Image 1 (spheres, rainbow, N blue to C red):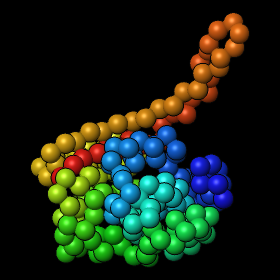
Image 2: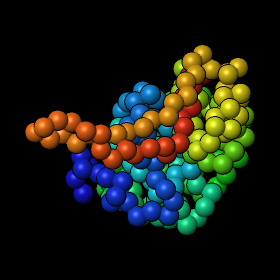
Image 3: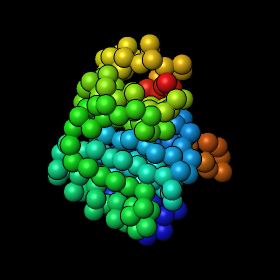
Image 4: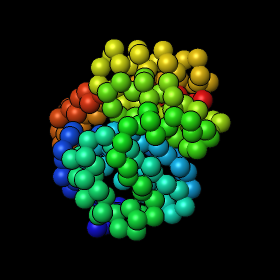
Length: 193
């Protein structure tokens, strides 16, 4: 598969994947670089995992934890499209993120959470981030943004919450008009410890 043309549409879905517009913002705000180690919980179909693995490859790693075995198997199938990038830079595990992170310190450069009750994972997981490590939490509802913010505000030196909306324009000889809008997919809370 041509890695430059990797599209969310080529991934078989068992859940709604994070949209490319959100994936791009997440990888940029996390400041991912080759060699970084990233923790991800809520792997879903694996599209965000693929985006991050392509950046951290070849020495870096994305450690993905998924509690739903059906989603984990589908993510593995989808990520196999990456070939060597998958083999070298992705480690997928079945399990509970909170249990996996408990007791870990200074392991990861970044953390991405897309799961119910991310606040519970953050309560034990922030110590697993290296100094100046960054976190991104995908939240479908305002209430979840508020809960995540409360957990992060005392531990982070920088916090930001965003909603990214994409609107395509129709460019014609006579002018430009608004086209199809890809509206709300969720909110993203970013922080740096």
